[in-house]
Amino acid sequence: MKALRKKLMHSAADPEPRPETAQVPVAVHGGIDPAELERLGLDARELVDFSVNTNPFGPAPEVRKVLEDVPLDRYPDPDASAFRQALAESFGASSAEILAGNGASELIWLVALTFLNRGDRVMILGPTYGEYARAAAIMGATVTTLSAQPDDDFAIHPDQVYRALRRLRPKVVFLCNPNNPTGTFLEPETIVFWARKFPGTMFVVDEAYLGFANWRAGGVSPRWENETPHRGLTLPARQNVLRLRSMTKDLGLAGLRLGYALAPQEVIGWLARVRPPWSVNALAQAAGIEALRRGDYYRDCLTLLATAKAEVVAGLNTLSYQPAPSALPFFLLPVGNGEAFRLALLKKCILVRDGASFGLPEFVRIAARRPEDNARLLAALAEVPHAG
Image (cartoon, rainbow, N blue to C red):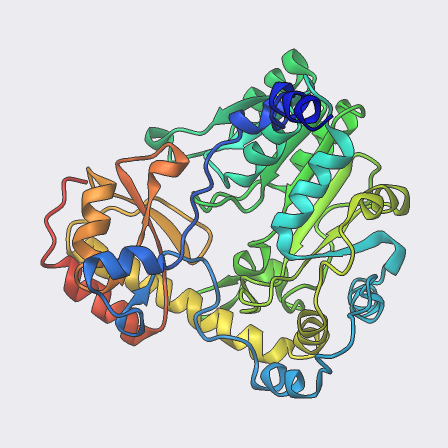
């Protein structure tokens, strides 16, 4: 009997993953890589990180304070009810139209789990965030990327997108608006037009950086004069429009991971069915609620950041660099060889984002920071050769 059991064990096939797993692209994101710093003998405490698109002034002091009172020995509310209600009151919407997530990235994966089958067509407006393609690939979808071009200032041409929609008839469209890494902004009316013309397509509009777009050097843009971060609706509710928001960027909560989806109640219900339990921890929920109360603080931060970005761009122009136009505090910079350029700066304890993962190896992406950090960047760039 033992010999038979042993023979059966050896003849059984080893467990194998789903075939789609092998097709999932490798994840490449900005931020500090501790292993790389160790190889180079660098101290992370001395590093200035221009590779991440977050609020460099950090969360409001009251947000940090409220975390002290969060009980760590209790499970978080699985529905994030209080957080969703705070958002609903801010938007004048129903909490049933809001789903909290572990950052916008979790919500992107929930979209793929909910809507995509093997062989479905997905269209992505690029160059853009890599998680859209990864989430689609794990479900076996066929991805087509319609990419804007550097020699056209990465402009999105609605007529070209419309023709691609008519040809492909995709199940899902992912578009980041304003876009990462290009900083381009597409008028909401254009997205609504596409959604009306193609009701069978789910348009997933990632608005993770929308808060940054509301501000300019010297103050808030006139069109957003009465707004604070995470207030106001940019798109009307439609059954085939799903909007994603992140509170890790403009509100400075990257370490806590917090985002939310906005859509009609039925769509939110579908996403909720495939959501992992307790995906939004108690600290994130408490921080999100408090951050929504501190609009004045964040408004001041983003105004300062817009001014800092304008100063960085002016300094780069003085050094004969030509940053690509961007409506956001971050921008693409042509440097010839992005990988070599990044490494040269890293050795000076300055981190920028290599554009290769966006399909832009001749670019780096830089996000403006505090004035003293920006001055350090410009001083280092004066010593780094470039071919941009």
